[in-house]
Image (cartoon, rainbow over all chains, first blue to last red; front, side):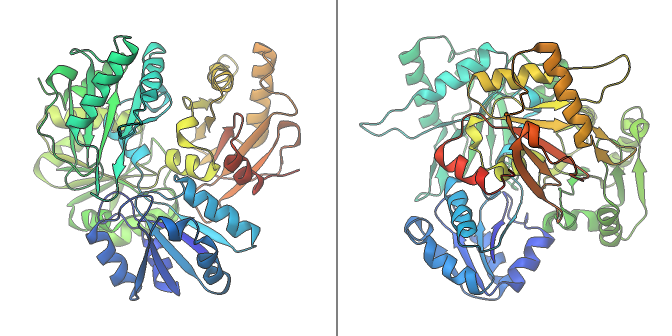
Length: 253
Length: 253
């Protein structure tokens, strides 16, 4: 049996049910590839499971699937992951392969950036358009397609949830200065007037953790000193009265 | 201080952090209005908090806000809710009013239908269009606007997550027969060819609980014997290869 066990966003988000799974599993491994797990969370996993926990890198999670499934075919194996599992394609591939090999599996869910960002943004869930990600730029790869998603959402009066690319080596999402630079460059590329000094944006830092901090401000006045491990941006469309009241709680002049 | 404490979807989803909050709070209340809390979860809350837990109805959660906030101004008050808090407008209104009265608040997150449905559907998160709800029909109120949302998502090659209206008295979401009937009636109204016998639909029952069951099938072949407390529908657009492989695991001929 294979368990994908979500550790959630906060350091103490692990559920009662997941603790029971970690206690009973013969083998516990940690997904160090699709997202990084904090030292505090790893300590908790070690202490609950009372066994050595192997850290899985990209190679182990992709080319090494069959080694993991060999173990799961004869014993109870848990892979702990940050946040809510099964959002990453890698996790889906593992379960598809488990099913093909007739190995049972179960996903233990936890707190998730999708739900927490929508909740803490104060905006109505049914008014969000498709989610997008601002990816890191390199010399030869400068993707700006997120701009099209946000612009389309804005034109349809829908809110946008924008993830920032994650650097698993540095264990941090894109710094605010870098994100603002890419947004400005995308504006120069498309010139549709999406990124203007007056565009209101929400910056949701370290959601669901003790360090959570939310700021809504105009693009031209964004707090450039924001320090975070993980941040998510919100582009609100025209807010309803209650949405506007909620945003005001976090507004920065 | 006011805490909104999410109990999640499964009976044992409560987090370590939330247990600590329930232990230290002077007053614990339960939101019996925006969603129903299972007997098993209530037992857990009573046993962790070791105090009487007042059940709040619509009146207490809306007209009665100031009574709740009076308590929170001088002591630590927790309101437990099903799933992840702060999705319901009622919760946002309470926090806006708390802020106005300078009462501190904190939201303790948990597993959420949004994240779990996207995860368990096997479909890519960035390919989902806006979420919608199929509301119950009465003699004089027969809303069909969900059809427009789904049709627009389909035409943009986006997936749809469709919630079913919840009956807090019966403690169950709309039975499958009723949902299929409303879908067919909406098709008769719009006649855009969205609901056909060949349209593939996912029915995700009791997600994140011990009773979780997922079935993908053509509209004309949907399993009418599905029994559930809460269900969510998925209208997939054209799947990618991995999405198609994932869907196959739950396909019903």
